[in-house]
Length: 255
Image (cartoon, rainbow, N blue to C red; front, side):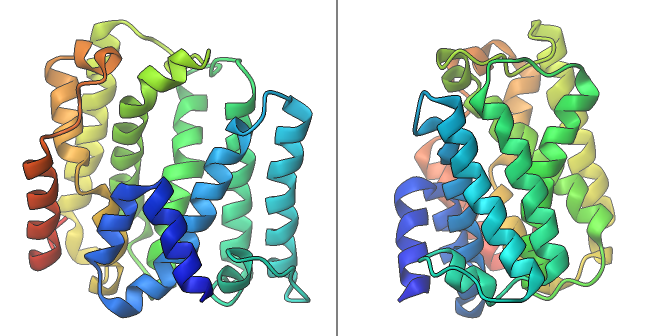
């Protein structure tokens, strides 16, 4: 029932990851859904209130839960925390704690200090999440390869979120000039190509964790070619291309 509850949360709140997980083997779904439900709950926690202190408390609740998991003692009962506790090793809990900490950026309206701060945010969110997913599926090597791919996915997702972030009063880009946005997308495409060049270093067991990034290349190519589409919110592919691309990648195992 806990896995089903997690799946339903992801289906409602993160439909792309839900589709990607449903394209994975059944055994992988039971491990990915609790993790993705956790990520969804943490990602939306800062946006559920206008009060910064309350948002901080919401994130601290998740940090406390991860601390309990990491310590290996009694863990609070919760529809997401309970199944997640059965999956995480202490190192995974520590990694996800950094993900929660990074989400504090969403509470406030301060811009990133520089490009390095932005890169660190993508690392703590997109990279940590995807590497943890791969770890839960049995990956014991290829972390650098996966992180390159996850970084590209994180940038693609970030570019798609920019219109909403700006509408909520956030400053999501260090440099919002069209040429800088195009360069950001090109750099991410370079990380993606580097990952694919070393795909043999990543165990096949990890592949379902990478399905969540099935749209990244197309999004990045569109942003690099026409950066104005970022602010206009026109980076998403057609529904036919979107679902067809996922189907092809799930059948072939290519990412």
